[in-house]
Image 1: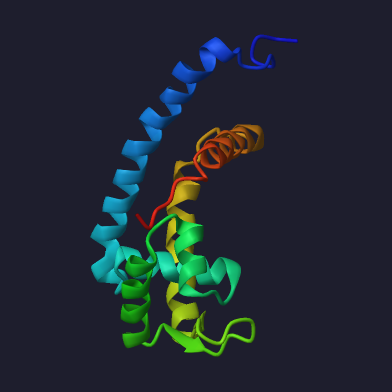
Image 2: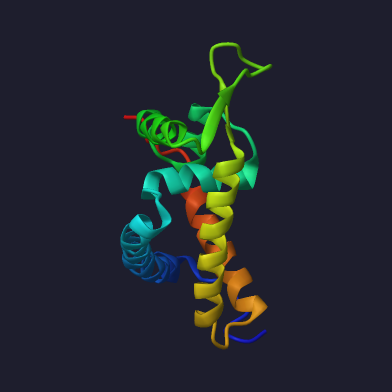
Length: 158
């Protein structure tokens, strides 16, 4: 077993995983800023774009479900949903599982809008992939998934 294949010793785990956090924070802020800069051309705020992306990926959801999936407050999600409804990008429909909590789903205009955003983002990411391998990306997703699971008990509605 090579050094790269051995499990991470517990005494090294904290410092090494902090290296990941040290990169994720600035990456998140830069991507968020890029989305904000592109928002006027796309006609979508960062929050509305996040709602559209979530519905595109998972189908109709309730506001509380979206809040949990994004680890953000229901109140913030509700404001973003209200904006998306006003723009005709999403609509509320009856929820057969829970009468008091409507399902939010994409409209045709919402599908068109998020498809265009995703196409632009994929083109940008294709240009930056360089020599990354499938294994590189799989490992990154595995590490980030483990870190998200570590903090899944954090309540975002406090």
